Image (cartoon, rainbow, N blue to C red; front, side, top):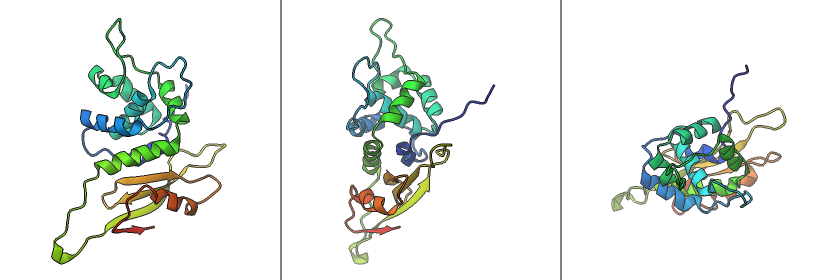
Length: 209
């Protein structure tokens, strides 16, 4: 029997990086404020699970360490009932239990959702969580914020029919990804550079690339 492969997570979730602090209910509430702006690409007929709940669950799973679609689905399956409620999953009116989606349901949504919209929502969420810079003493003068722009290839994204996914990301000096864009397969990083920075506050900032 062939070994089960672990599919990589979508590129939009790559910017979440490694978890640093435990995920709390307030974190999930914050997530909902940003992810609600991501449109549901599915046909409205026959939908059992709202896209917002599925996206919140997927992002929460990555924030707590999931690094593949399989790991995301397993995290959702193992989540306690009260956590599912916070994420937005409705309870069955007969049993009172909150059913969880099949792994294929999560995978299909993440594969079809607008990658740029999800990137923008997650970037805005991460920027909102980034603490403001410490104000310097007046005698020392202003301290400029530093943002580094760099590219990377998503590990495990190359297939027999498609090239590996390339991303361009803007990070602060703490390593927090502030914005990210996928580089077009037949292009390079240069055309993505200006659009990457469009949503960032660049006043009193040094950008390195």
